[in-house]
Image 1 (cartoon, rainbow, N blue to C red):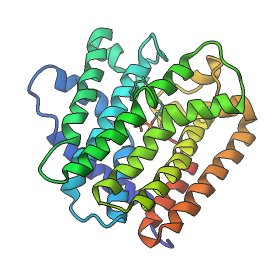
Image 2: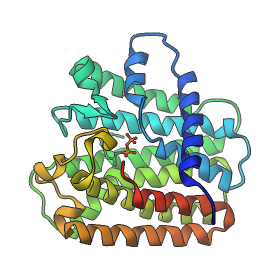
Image 3: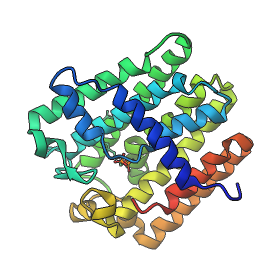
Length: 290
Ligand code: GRG
């Protein structure tokens, strides 16, 4: 897409998501401000993926997809709060400010995460209509983030005894990150009633994009700047974690990241012109610095 400004596109969509998130966070009790605190500041990649595939698949009512897009961000934020806890990755900094447990204490942080997780499912089922599609989204998201998805990936990631092999790395990347990115890609298309063949292609392509996303995350842990990342770089290498640069070196990790990006771009393009923004988004993820 010659002349297409992906940065401006991301800014525009992020503003829409942020404004919708504000509406979903009335200050009704002490939990909502804590949940909001952690919501503020992310790139909103997962909701933007859902909005983009919704439109690419022919959806035209943004209000029909926005609650789902926001729900994905809620679950992602929940995973970040719990990931930062001392018993997990133990990070004091997230999204450029004190992580939830540093700001509110451990028990409230756990509850803020729990609140976000449950509230997400209220948003997935928000509004009238598209009942079958909403059930399909809930099923797909539950699979992607539960014991066959992110929770499993996190368990693999925090294990102290693990083999430093390509297979072990693929498992961590796939379950910790890629499945969630893939379901974010697919969710918008489900709500736009895309054909099963398109959904299947989006799932495979979303997995490539998700693997790429975690590769760039691993690379940025080595070369990224704290001010840009809003979190502490070097933590994975300091902790001796199994990451792409640890296994392949920086150049090897970059090479493989490019290969995942090329696979994703080729497949998004195969779906036709309306999916071209997803190809641009893939290139953005490959080159990202935050
Ligand atoms: C069931 C969702 C769930 C969580 C419980 C704690 C946990 C189990 C999982 C942690 C998984 C995790 C933190 C994976 C890393 C994914 C990742 C690359 C995060 C960074 O995402 P960005 O760059 O961050 O999109 P922003 O802040 O921009 O949203």
